[in-house]
Length: 582
Image 1 (spheres, rainbow, N blue to C red):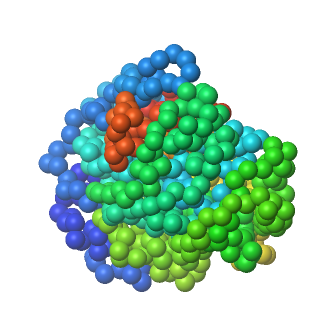
Image 2 (image 1 turned 180 degrees about the vertical axis):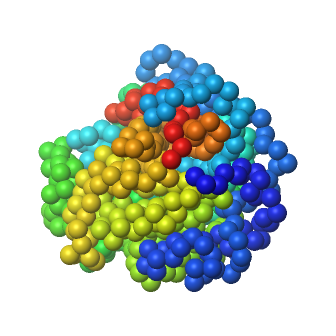
Image 3 (image 1 turned 90 degrees about the vertical axis):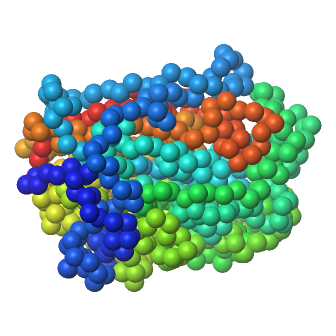
C-alpha cells in the first residue's frame, strides 16, 4: 500500500454532519459503476472522502482493554447436568495465528491502527406467529424449532446496547468506525420482521407481535407437547428436560420494547433469509404462498415421516420454487389451526428491502441507505462498496440466489464488478463482506431475473480475491459458527476468511475486527468476540426487556439438539491474524 495513516489521524477535522451527509455519497453501486471518489459519484455533494464514523476521535488511542468482551468473561454453566443455568465464566484468551506470515517481536509498540468495526450476523429476527413457519419439522429434527425464538428482538437490542457501551477497539484502542450486519437479519422474509430489524439497528419502539394485538397465537400455547409450553402445566418434551414453567413468558415476549439504536453508522449485507421466503424458497410470485403468509391458518403439527420428507426437499434443494411446499400445505389443510390474519406478515421483495434501508425514518446514525443507494434500487442490485478509512475500503456482496435454496453464489456481472472494484482501488486495503462463506457458495441455480447469466461458487470468489494483493479479509456468517480460515495464493498474496457465529444459536456472539499496520512489513487483524449486554445470570421473576435478553441466552444454551461446537476452537475466536503487506 502506498499510503498509511492511522484512523485517529485520518478522522481529525471530520465532523458528524459531514460524515452523515457524505457517507452515502462514497457508495459504489453495481448498477451505475460508481467509483469511491466523490467527484465521480452521481450522489457526491462534498469534497474529500469521509470516514464512516459517528464518534469524535480521541486525541490518542485508548489503551487496549478487555471489559465488555469475551476476553474478560463468557457465559458458562453453573451446574453440571440437566437444564443448566448460566453464570460468569472465564474469558477466552487471544491466539496469534501465523499461517500466512510470521509475527515479529516489538510490533505492538510500532503498529498503527487502520480501521476498526463490529460485525453482526444472523440475527434472525422472528415473527414467531407467522403462518408459514416450519416449526413442525421438529417432529423429525428437534433443533428445527428452538425454545428461545420468541426473544430474538430483546436479544438483538441487548447486542446493540453492548456495542454502544464499548470504549473503542479492544486491541488497538482505536475508535470504532461502524457496524456491518452480514445477513439473515430477518428469518421468514416477512415485512413485520424487516420493520423490527430497522428499528433495532436505528432505534425505536418495537412490538414483536402480529395477529391479534396482545394475544400470542403460535406453537407455544398450542398445548402440543412437541414445543415448550412455558405458561401452562402441560408436561411437554422440553419441561421434561428441565425447562422452567414461566406463567407470563408469552405475554412478556410480545410486549413493546425499545431499542436505543446503534451509536455508530451501520451498513447492511443481505442473507438468504432476507431474500427468500423461509430462507430457501424462490416463491415470491406464488399467489397461494403469498396469501397463506397473511392468512388465518397455521400448520403446527405433522408426522415425523412427513416432516422428514419436507426437510429433505429443503436440504437437497429439490423444491427451490416451493411448489412442493405449497402442495404439502394443501395436503395438511385440515390439520391447520385458526389464527388472526395480518397483512404485515407479507413477504418483502428486493425492492422493499432497499426502500426500507433508504427510508429516512430508519437512518439512525447513518449513512443514508446504510450502504445501498437509489442506483441499487434502479438496477435491482444489492451490492456496493464504501470507504472505511483513508486506507481501507469495504465491499458488500449479495451472495443470495433468487432462484431458491439457502446456499449461495454470485452472478457473472457481480463477480466482474468485484474484480474491477479491487483493481480500481489497488492503493487501498480491502475488506469484503458477504453472508455466505466460501464453502457454502455451491448453489449455481440461475437467477430468474437474469436467466442467461452464469452463477459462480465460492472457489471462484476465492480465486478473484486471491488475485489482488490489497485484500485483507473476507468477513461472513451463515454457518452460525466461528471459523477463521487462511487463504494463500502465489506471489505472497493471501487473506483471512473470518466467519462469525450467529446471534440466534448459542453462544450468540458478534465480533469486533481491527486492522493495524505493524510497520515491519506485516499487517495484523484482531478479532474479538462480544456477547450481548444482558447479565449471564437469569432471574425467572425478571421478565423485563433486559431479563428477557438474559433468558434468551440461557434458553439457547439449553436448546435440545443444539450444536455444542459453534463457538469454534480457541484459534477461531479472539485472535491476532498476521499477514504480509501486499
